[in-house]
Length: 281
Image: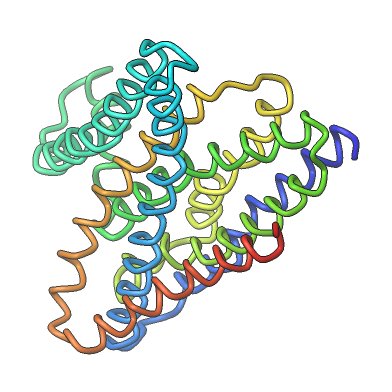
């Protein structure tokens, strides 16, 4: 399989996220539908944080086992563990402070000053003035995009090592994963302001595009440390949006429906993972 074919298939795996995005365009969905879609998104994200952390922790545990058995030095374990902890903290706290900044921009958006200051303030307020559901969708797409960059690295590295069967398996499995991630992205917007097609396309590029970029990078540069760092940052980001989505689902006051749809999201996530394992043998 040529480099161009690998990159094209990596792009296809990433852009299956677009399959679920049109749900965000539904006009005035019923509250039960909005609650169900938000809970489905929450279930998928809970699966994703488990999946991402498993990928991030595995090399760290392998380095620890190697250090205990005197096969490698302790420095590698310490370095990877520091990347894991630092990346997770960065992913979580950067979104905490970013969301705080966004809220401050929203509160002060009426205070438009003269001249260039007014232009700069207007540029900031364009994002800050987005509905809360749209801002949360952007954060979810960002976290998923970081996760998908790590998946792209795995695809590219497998192809570069000549493991074509494994690369194809990863493309199929990650494509299935990403198809469900579209639901996770649009979940917070259900029942609120209807997003434009342009905004949905932006969310798809943020969430799915990094798979394509990761595939390119992975073919030319293999680094276990970079994979750990990106998966750790993704896990921290996803944890933040999970706590935000819990708050969203509580506002619907439909605990039974939310619990069942959350469970369905988890089942969908693990089902695609099991398919990947079965195909990979």
